[in-house]
Amino acid sequence: MIPSVLEKLIKESTHDGNVNLKEITEFFNIKIELDRQMTDLCRIYISDEDKNPVIKLSPNNDRKTKFTLVAIAIAEFILTPSRLEGEGISYDMFFLKEIYHQRYSYRMMLATRLAVPEDIINQMDQPDFDMVGYVAESDYQPQFINCCVKDSSALFLLSNFSELPANAR
Image (cartoon, rainbow, N blue to C red; front, top):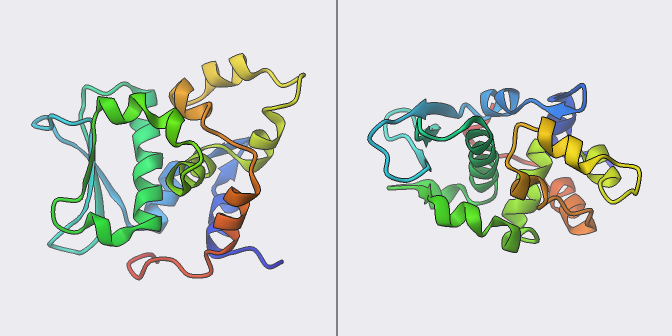
């Protein structure tokens, strides 16, 4: 099977066992900004000015929360760009507390693949894989890493992206 554009992007953005989210955001022309006025943890929307996606983060978020929310927001943009028009989508602390229950949703399956290389996901259920060490060294929240599922549905999702949104390069 020929890899999709999204699979190629993830593979090309993977270095030393990590997916570089900055490369993914650059590919999609996604701006990331901090907003001190935010009451939510994160918001993604389409800018009225240049029609590119913008992810606004609360500066009060720790590093792992920021990375986690960016991965989820990018997945949302890829899967449902029309939901980002107008006010866009906001994520609050209640959303983050419930992400494990959403692990089989397309959004979470894609978000985890944007954050964790497929070969690492495939190793996670092996008895000799140091999950505690991986989670400790990861840029993502533990509950997000625990959302990684070795599932053919996630691979099906990735392999069926032959096109990406119009405002992607």
